Structures are given as C-alpha cells and as structure tokens.
Amino acid sequence: MTPSPRDVFLRLVQGVADGNFEELPDLYGEVTDVRHPMATPEPEPLTTRRALREHFTVPPEGRASLPKRRVVDVVVHETADPEVIVAEFGYEFTRPDGSTSKVPCVFVMRVRDGRIVESRDYIDPIRTYTARGDLDLLIASLRSGAS
View 1: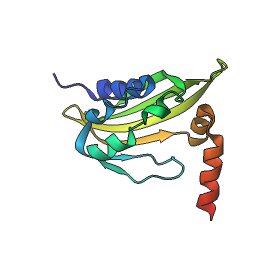
View 2: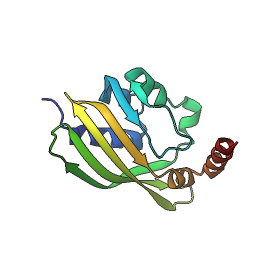
View 3: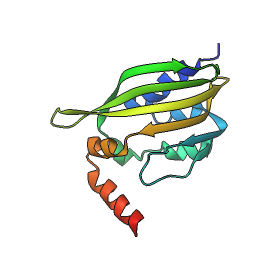
View 4: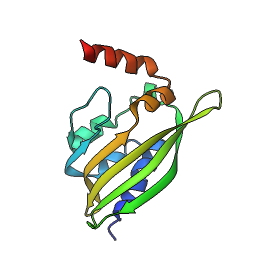
C-alpha cells in the first residue's frame, strides 16, 4: 500500500529528529522541487534525490555534536488536492544543560505515489541557529550577505 502524504511527512520529520539521515532521500522522488524560503543563507532548490542525499549527509564526526531534538505539536491539514498537505509542527531541541527550545515549522508538501515531489519547508532560521547553538554562524552568514 502506498503511504499517504501524512505518513510520508511523519517519516521525514521523525527521521530528521532521530538522525536517520541516510534513509531520508528515499522519501523523495528522483525529480523533486524542495525549497527552504526562510533559510539563511538562501540555498538553491533541491531538485533531485541525489541533491537531497548530499543535503542530508552528515559526516560521522559531526553526528556526535548534533543536538537532541524531537517532533512536537504536529497538525496536518489535508487540502482539496489529495497529493498536498500543509503540516505545522515544531522541533524541540534539548541543550546539553537540559534546557529546551522549540523551532516552529510549516511544510507544504506534494506527495505522489508515496514520494515527495515538491515541498516548501518554512523553518524559523533565528530560532534554529539559536537552538543548535550556532548563532555565530547565522551572524557571519548575514554579514557576508550584506557585503
């Protein structure tokens, strides 16, 4: 049975939270259009599964430093188009000291035959960098973009 758009979305965000990055590209079509409109710096669209494989690649030495996160506050809205969903959720990050912060997200996804073929991933960049402890990277990115 082909997974529903909701099922594919849940596998994606849970896979990110669990750090199962190797499995994530297989959730996408060979040809796709994934954009992160709020990302800083603004990345190029990801238009192939190969590009997504590169996007999700985390070197082994970087995995240990990834903050713990979990998916919270999931609300999936179905639309008149059975391939399209709008999903609201958050990633709750846990810092080494035990404190948490939540990053709100909204994904608008088109899933065809069980694969993501189009997605707009709206993720708060300031809260993301802050939650990951990478605020200096955001500031550097903003400064280099202003040049």
